[in-house]
Length: 179
Length: 371
Image (cartoon, rainbow over all chains, first blue to last red; front, top):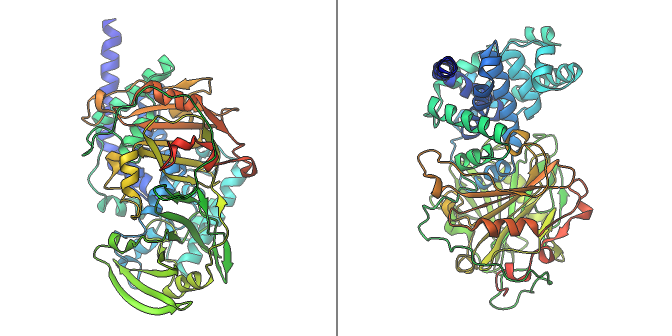
């Protein structure tokens, strides 16, 4: 019994250490997937809760957490209150428009563009190009066929190109590697 | 520039974290307990409290009434709009297309008016570009536009109109009927934001004509709501993430809302009364489909003691793919929430033609002015 308690305690300590080290990165990943910091944090918390339960049975905690976060972030955007909360913010916008006018920083432009890509396509782009997952790995993470991943990759990049204009200024080499 | 650079970039701009390792450990332990016990606390409560929409914890400025014993359930036609009554549960705006813009049928009814989404052809696939709200006669939304610059602009169908500049967003306010105003807004955040021009908002205004009242349809109804609670808002829209919802608040608060714009949801978070949500099942939150009403055990969260945590119960729809949830204040009587869900009736979620008219799907007593 004593051994078991020690193991549980060790696991929890490892988990805490992992969370402290990875929280910022996971939050960013979730934000890029769902486009809302509050939803992103809820998604991260949900994903970490699952990771905590499976901690001792998973080899690659980092990979598990990252795919779980992306999946959870997609789920968050499907919750019924999301659309409503989004729409209720129309009357009094809280975000300045400056970052969307021409001449702004390229990264802000790309980030804004990514958030305009449909959420499923965006999730594929995030996993493929931010997380560096292969097509089969992405398909497994999102629980969809590999063909869907390929199609979403292509459509997502096309959408980015359309949004950003003829010269999106992104590393398009990855596109052909991806599909 | 590589997409992968975005991750480093976005971390720099991140707001302070709301959760830390302690929260993650607590959430993990709750999840493990639920999986072992089958029916303890649902993560959806944690998420709901964090998001704040159904946050009904007892920090309200005006205490919510405790829910008394149930009266005999009844379903009667909704009252009509007599003096002292709230508006009928009907929509007068009907979807239409003008140029590249599509105004959908309304998705939201409230005591203050009805709201429909504006979508732009060739725009964002999974998000609307704007919204239009028709306010009920006598309600002036300008009071909700604090800090906005409001200037008169050319008339629309001979009636006055105003351009509203709110933090860079061009909105359009106009009189669409005698003593009745409408507000067209452009999405301010997330996908699809800022995608409508002032000219396009005007295009919507010029094409909009209210029609004959049509019943508000929801995927659920119930034969019982706790006494002294009244419907102030319902929303129903078939999409992957939202099916139907309803909000009920104490009668005194509902009556106080008559003739005014809807309160800012961020301000009245603690006074949201009962929130009913019908949405797809989330296995990690709701567990495996099972019969009966489920009320997960509450736990302390984010420094709020267990007795101040909101009440939460849910029931699976036939087939288990969807779930109807009710969130209530900490003072709510769980028996009342159970009774509300036990009286629930459903249409087929994927067949809106089978949905129920909100005006008759709830007891007449649940409408403002009802008894």
